[in-house]
Length: 371
Image (cartoon, rainbow, N blue to C red; front, side, top):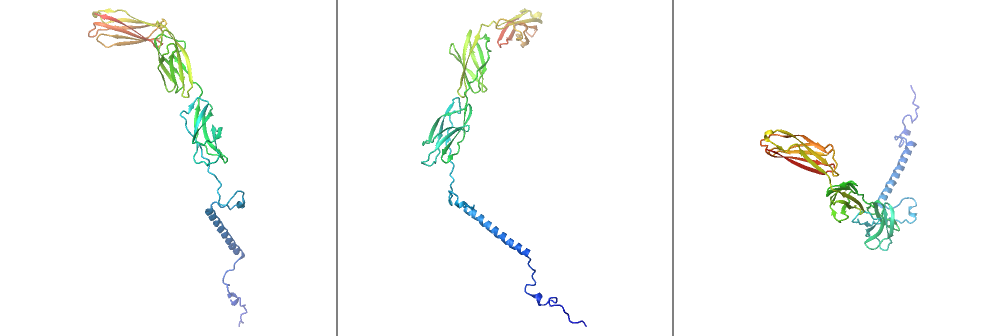
């Protein structure tokens, strides 16, 4: 028979395996370290949250190392000062000038500390042009601020021991010291006119005014200046030389003047009209006549290329016209047909209009009779 078992009590599940806590798994060193580390991180986070709350509540409390011992620092004290207010520059009536300097009117800012010394600084295009003590009166003038040609951006600011205050809104002043130009385009310089009236034409600076005066008589002629500077003036001219003084003033106040001389001479311009016949019989109609026009200019010379318009007006019918140009001063209507309307009897009128290169118009007429 098999003998009694010799297994040990541990192998048989004896009391040594039922000790208190024998049913829990063993804690390894690695698991223990992780738990301790978790506890350390948790406390760090707690301190961080507490510090953030303190910053939010305190606002001005400094946690940096040594902040409490920094020179000039004091717990709960705000040492920053608001910026100095800017003076106001009043806009003058004219922001375009020909002067080299300008007087500025300024307003003293309100709410300045009493007993403090302030200065006012004026800059032009970013450069300091003037600095002087700030007057006590609310409104004051700074005279003789220098301007450069063209645009000048002017600003003002207060100056104190703490530094320079805010700048005022810019004021732009434009300096224009150039006189306007006067250019006459008609009549051309040196030209002679042959009429007692003429129109002066030319150009000056845009926005400028223009006056035209007869030097001998002192008479002023009305002038019109367009927005772009083109001008016209209607003239009355005497025989001989007419001396005129033209004056132009631009928006900045610059004045320019020019003297011109317009010579008026007796005109020799002429227009002569001829018709090949001037008395016709109704029984002989229709008939073809020839009309000739002879044109000479103001100097008495035959004109080439003058526009000529012939017209024939029957007594009881519609007017007929014919246009042509002169050659060596002559223009011809070679097909001047006198036809047989219902009642051809009476005066037939032949007229001619010639326009010279100068613009002068010449007219002539001639009658022919149908019996």
